[in-house]
Image (tube, rainbow, N blue to C red):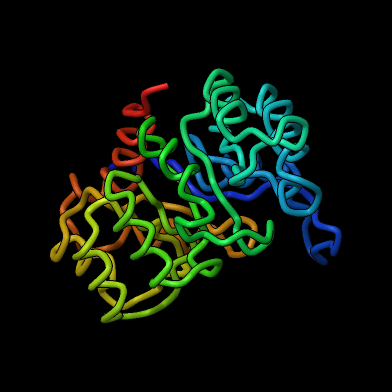
Length: 252
């Protein structure tokens, strides 16, 4: 089997107030993990966005990313923008100017509703710029996702940390209803024949790949995709091609 180009869509870098016992997921540790697993690049979020504030975490992310060329910085957004101006539009424009090509939200940590009545302006900006928006599956409900996508069908929403749901009736119904819902497939989605069934049912173009760093051993995610019984073009699309396309289609 030829070497597979991998781009991880979900690493979360930065130390926690509650230290991990066996490792320290700082920038150097993430780079070691990328090298160990032969991952070419990674979309990187910063833990300080939730441990401190989105503004501070984003500043630290852009600063650290200058020293780590494999990183693709993903700023964290909130419906009210940065604290100085409380302007979402100004914050969004500034991040695009800095080079933002993907972003993330954490509604539970930042105490806002992900539903359109609260976050609609944020989704509108992301949809207009064709900006992929990452959100942890655990931080919202499928009803939330359905309401968001019904209001903003062109929003490119990427659900991370999708758990082991098997042939989940609600998840498949959601994917059937909304063509712009994407999944980040990592070892969290350790479903027997899960990847081939997704590809067979919905095609190969809506899935990106991740490692769940630092929550899980990344080698399991590499194995999950490497040995999935799917055609090689589909494997390459999930490993890197779909994410590269989403990033390239952003219109700043």
